Image (cartoon, rainbow, N blue to C red):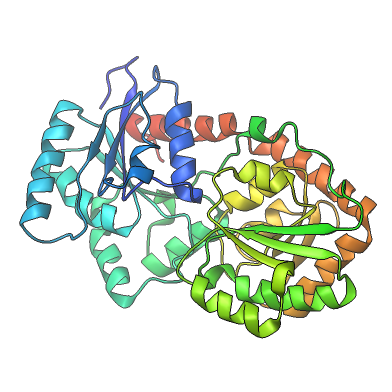
Length: 373
């Protein structure tokens, strides 16, 4: 344990770095930590891709293990390298993200005598197989605390993984508000309305449902253009559905977008049509940009978006309700502007990056002081 007055040494373990929600939140946390209170290091299970390396923080120790398979001679050598890294940079806490990183690093952490191990899961585990659930339960005695970013995620960990409620802690996300400070008001271009979504192209994000809703909206509002910023495994299926629905240039799959704030500043109405979420980083950013949001009633969405105050909340999977809510905001632009202002004020008051970093710092200090997490 750290001596009184010394910073808590926290080693974060993640598969790779990227611009997606969890990885971007981790990078923001590492950059924002006060080194007088928390001293970070970063372990990348793989980390070989140039896209990951270019995101590496420059002000903390980093190791890339190059592991793509968890068994075999290469994995064993990587475990020895991690042991040496932790000997040179001994952590008080190992904080593990994603399944492979947790499976690999958890036994190494215990063999190295790391006193506190934390696992992070910010989704609801909808994709977990029986094998993963069994492994999670086997790992449970070695984990001191589980972190998630929403009350819904906390309940899922308690119900599905059988975790002790006292060891499951909610630490909410935060947004870099400065990146949205100069967002122009929506509906600045006469004659066209841009509806935008930021999401990976995976079934859980329900982009196919958004396409079907767009087809209905366009029948009443032919001047609308829908754009999705993100890429992923479902792209080919979505392109086929795009052709079947005849959406043409009215629905654009833009692929990965590096400058998400610029994308959000360019749209008029934001949509998050997911089937499942924890606390969505994309949703917080949509609200920080001052856009009225149509979000499905999953995870923390309804807690963030007050229906009829800062946006609209609709039932997940209801294409008609999604289309009606989008069309409503397009037709009542002053109402949509008012929702957007309310959303921006709410996020600024509650979900800035500084507040997120403070929440994590307090958690790590409590955990290593012997207090309840």
